[in-house]
Image (cartoon, rainbow, N blue to C red):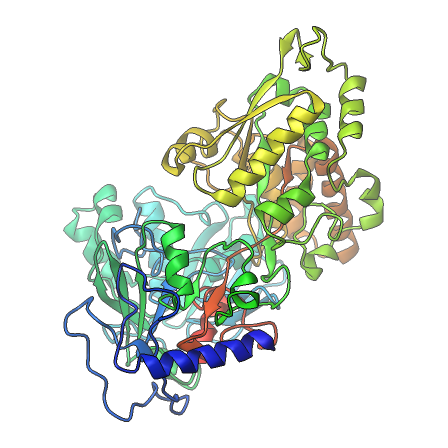
Amino acid sequence: MKKKTLALLLALVMALSLLAGCGGDSNTPSTPDTPPAETQTPDTPDTPPAEPEAPAEPTAPGGDLPRNETLYFGGQQWGEVNSWNPVGANQNNAMAIASSAAGSRTVMFETLYMYNFLTGEMVPLLADGDYSWNAEKTELTVKINPAAKWSDGAAVTANDVKRTFDVGLEIGNPSTFHPYISEIAVTSDTELVIKANLDNLNPFMLEDFLSGQYIAQAAWIDTCLARNNNDAQGFLNDKGEDAPYTGPYGPYYSDDQKVVFVRNDSYWGQDASMWGKLPIPKYIAHTIYADNAASEVAFKAGEIDVNQQFIPNIQDLWEKDGLPISTFYDHAPYGVCATMPTAWFNMNMPVIAENPALRKAIAIAVDYDQIIANAMTNQSPSFSEVPRSVMNPTAGEQALYDHDAVKDLQWAGNDVEGAKALLDEAGIVDNDGDGWREWNGEKISLQAVCPQGWTDWNASMEIVAAAGQNIGVDITTYFPPADTYYPTVLTSPTQTEGAIFMWSPPAAAPSSPWARVNALMGKDYVGMENNWSGNFGQYVNDEADALIKKIPTMTDEAEIKAAYTELTRIYLTDVPSFSLMYRPDKFHSVNESVWTNFPNESNGIPPLDCTDGYGIAALYELELA
C-alpha cells in the first residue's frame, strides 16, 4: 500500500539521520522532519529484541530511554499519577488502571479474560481455558492458570479473585458487579465459582466481570487495610506503590512530565500456556502533554508511536504529508466504530419530558451528514449507510433486530420540513410572531451542553443548535470545563442545566448490545447519584424496562431478536436521546517510524491501542522499522 511504502522510506531516512540520538522524551516536540528513530531487527519471539551492543540504560529514571526499546503512547495520560492502587479511587493512572468490560488495560494489572470485540471471543489471561456455566446459567466456574504469578513471585489463587470482590462490600464501596453477583466461592487454590444474584439474574454481567475486573493480591489487600486501620477512605486513597501486579510491565518512573513502565522479564505470561514469550518493547512510556494540540504535534514528529486521539482528516497525514502514520483501516472510517456518542434529552424539564414531538422534531432536523463530514471528518459511517437503532454498526449487532420492522421510524437527518410539521401538529407553534415557538405560553429556550475543548463534540452540538434555529426552537450551546460538566450536568440525576447534553453509551463488550440498551433506557439508573453508567436523561418507560430485564435470561434467538426490535421501536418513537455519530471505542493511530506491525484489519488484533483487552496482543508482534 502507498502509505506503508512511505512509512518505510521515511523511517529509513530518519534512521540514517538520527542514529546518534535517542530522543522522544522531550516535553517540547521536535520538528516534524526530524522525529527520533533507531533501527534494529528483533530477535526470536521468545526473547526481547537483541542488540549488537547493549544499549545504555537510562542515565536516571525518566531520562533518555533507548528509543529502539521504548514504545511511546499518547492521548491517555493527562496529569500526574495519583496512585497505583488497583482497587482504589481517583488513581488518574490511565496507562496502568483503566478497567472496562470492553477491554481493560492490562499492562500492569490483569483480568481473568481478555475480550476481543472483533470476534466476540473471551481469551483466557489469568484464567486457564474457557469458563463454564451450569445448566441454569446461575453459576460460572473459572479455573486459574497455575503458571500465573504475582510480581513478588507468589502464585495467583482463586482466593485473590474472591478477596478482590469481597473487599468492596466490606468497606462499603461496591462495584458495578456487586448487584449481580451474590458470592464468589473458592473450591480450590485454582478454581472458583461465581454465583449469580438470583433476585437480579443477569448472566451478561457475570461475563463482564471476567474481562472488566482487575484482580488484586489478597495478601496485599489485607496489608493495605491494616495500615489504614480498616478505614475505607484511607484504603481507597492509599497510593498502592507496593501493590504486586501480574502484568508484563511495572512502574519505573513517574512525575508531572511523563510516566514510564519497565518490562518484568520474570513475567509469568512467557509460559507456554500463555503468550510463550515476553512483549517486545522493554519500556512503555507516556509523556504528559498540555493538550491535544501538543500531543498531535508530537505524534506527527514520531515522538508518539501509539496515539489515542481524534485527529481531523487523519488520512491527510499520509496522503498529503507523507508521514509514516497508519490507522486500522486505510480507508474511511479508519477505525472500528463500536459506540455512538449520543445527545440525551433531559426529562427533568417538563417542556422536554411532556413533548415527544419536540424531541423527535429536533432529532430529525439535525444535519448528521454535516456532523460526520465536518466534526468527524468522515471517521464514521453515515446514518444512511447504517440506519439508526440501538445497535452499533458492527455486523453482529446489526443482525440482532428486524430492520424492515422499524424502517418507517428511522431518520437520516436534515428533515427540516418534517420537523416543522411534527411541531405544528403538536400545537407547538410561534404565537407572537417573533420566529420562536412557544409551549404553555413561554418561548422554548434550550441549552445544548458538552465539555469545553472536546472539539468534535463541540462542533456536533453547534449543528444541533443550528437545527433548532431552522425549526423555530431556540437552542444555544454551552461548553463548561470537563470538571464542571461531570458533576453538574452528566452525573446529577436532578440537573436542569442542560436540556440536551452529550455522552457515549457502552461500546462493545460481552454484555453488548444489552448493556447499551440498558444505558439508553434502563430504569435502574434513574435517580442514581454520581451515575457514570447510563440513562443520564432520566427516561422512564416501563414496557422497555421490562424487556431489558428479560433479555439476559432469554435463550431463543428469535425471541431475542424480537425483543431488540421492539426496544428499537420504542426508542425511535419516544426519542429519549439520539445518537449523533458512530465512533471507535478507542481512536487508534500509529506512527511507524520506529515500530511497525501494529494491529490492522488483516491480523485479527483489535485496534485498542496495544493495551486494552485482546489488543495487548500487539505488544508481542511489534517489529522495529
